[in-house]
Length: 321
Image (cartoon, rainbow, N blue to C red; front, side, top):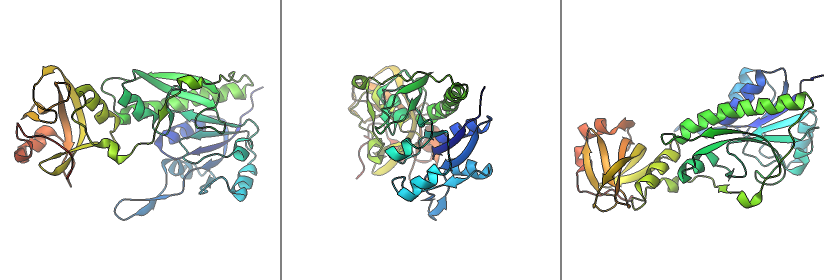
């Protein structure tokens, strides 16, 4: 007979909050929510709770925000919650062996890729940057490695040529909740999925993003540049310079069938159709939405009306001073 589970949940960003929200629509009992400590944000540096904490507060769930789970007192506090299973989604803290072994059924993770491809911190962005046609969600049994645990269940998700990390993230967050509920239902009915070991030879690593990666290298192909613009939206956002001013590039696309002999980074057209720039392969990248210093992200046509001097045909976009 099915019996609801006592669940500990650990997660921090919006991606994780969708998994917690999915659990809260079931009969399972969330006995505690672990999330990262509040972080200072904005110019005022005010402490802001994570999306997971905000949801937990709204549902009046017990909240725990230890700086580490390696502390014996934090581990004892977690054990006292007497959970059947711990669900982890983008938590941001390492779970030591003592924690992994505490829940009766261990710990499972909601990961935003089709493992073993893209283990690590930025699987969504790396999939777009590399040009993958498909990604998805993997629910895995956690072990002490970095996303190396046995896989329990997968759900695939196509990547379109228009997807940004923001749009793909939102789809995967919802898919993660669906996949998680499928696994929890199987466990609840004592019919769990058979664990499948990952093939380490097929593994790729999705390194954490840095701001420096957003700097556009115009010598790359138009396809590579367009992927970077989509992959780094909404963070760190691609950037370049126009006459010494740093410009953030929010949206752009490869102009199919358009060829140029202009040097990489040179502006070849600036009008209502967009900002056309030569790429390193002789193709053209069109910048559709950009952001000037201290301004908002705007369609290029709106920027062009007031700042034509920044985007003269024949000038080159380049690195910050």
